[in-house]
Image 1 (cartoon, rainbow, N blue to C red):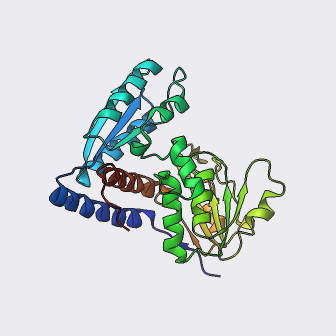
Image 2: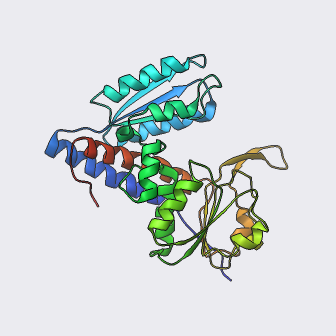
Image 3: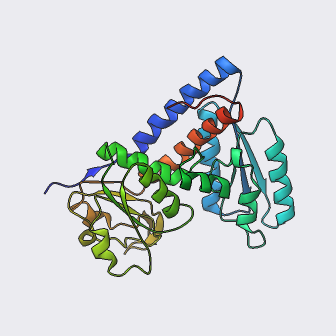
Length: 294
């Protein structure tokens, strides 16, 4: 059997960013509207600083306005909520993203629920979550949206496929399940309490790993020819003591079994930021009362 086809998340994300940039240019020209995204960073977490810088850079490249708010690690919850209130009222801001994780003194859920649902481009607010569940238009979380796009790019039609999701987080697993149901997939969600996990994952025509465990999914866990989407980003040391990024899937083993697979890095990660820009564009159109593009 030939090695699995690599699903190029970088290329797909580049195409999506270009599509968003064209739509932003048209929005400016026809309606005088510039989508704006505000990103809030609390503290000095190195990974978060990189993510925020990349998000801001790509927003500007797409023709959007970018507002970055960097707050100290000792910022109080009250001060952060006050900033959220100001951003909710700011007509130049159509999307608000608070970079997680937050320092211990701040309750992340309280902050997420304080964001205007219309500007919740992360798709984490309870109102957007509820709309997603009952099938109403909503801002959906970026990583799950990117996963579905990658699977559709690899397979085309997803209807009727058996999708197995490993992980049940509010950020990836649960919203991803709703999006796959919208695509008419048959769905199984696995987690740490699943009995005979390897046997369950091997049933999936589509296998999406979002468990946060480095290289947990082995080749024998995968149905031959399946589409494998690896959400995991784990930093591990190799035998020489060098740090490298690996996913939740043992890539070398999976490559010999799967029909198609996303690499780490270069798979789901680039799509997450591209989908954030797409959500910001959709939020700007909705707030202005304009119809959404298909």
